[in-house]
Image (cartoon, rainbow, N blue to C red):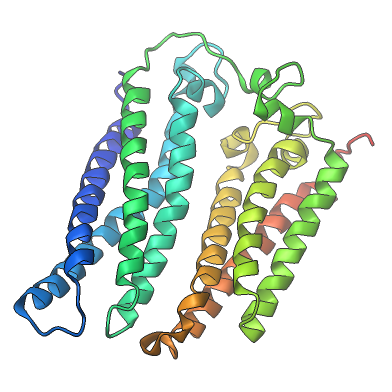
Length: 332
């Protein structure tokens, strides 16, 4: 194992977060079985106090879960000089079989944790805990993912040894390989541009419609999730090329480095915020008929929708800046 402050922080935080999530999920099972908001019994009062305490503490843990995704990527990128052949996070993530599964788990957990935090916030606004069962069911779904992430991350970091030869991003995203990453890298740039801008525009228009009328909420949620997938593919397919000004450099990690102004961090943060906000705004739609949320939910949905639309617009603007203003051009 390599001793690095980021690695130690990630291992310790994953241990604490997974422990808290598992404890909360276990308590959640008992709360789901015994909850009766119409009861004034001592047991119900105990459950109400317990769920308030758990939700408050878990909220802080899951907030750090969001941050840990970027700490993990930053750490993977910062230790790449220790390994021969590694030029960015691609090299360190490729050192063993656990690197990319950890990244995928952390990304999925970012979205799930973000949605749980939204549900928890909405639930706290209702006097009768209207979304309590919904948020604990989501927590039961989240728990195995968080535990799996902690185990995979531990295996990944504990298996790292210095001076191991690894592959660079060119070998992973190059045209000569048969991986999924290389398939995305070889997608034709101009058709992908059309798909990217069309999907983003459709999502923004649907978000504006939802913001103004309260209609098409589930459609907006679906489009937000689609935009996330299309945007990631687009970064690999053509967006990264304009930042690097190289027609063969498709790496989605090098833009996180100082040489490119760390532009990858605001790009990915905006994309994730837009996705989680859009999913959350749309998925709250079925709960608008709950009496205790009828007056409070629409403004919250509007705020989430506005956050999502603005995030997607800024993401698109940053991505488009080098396409429009750089001297680099792609061959048709």
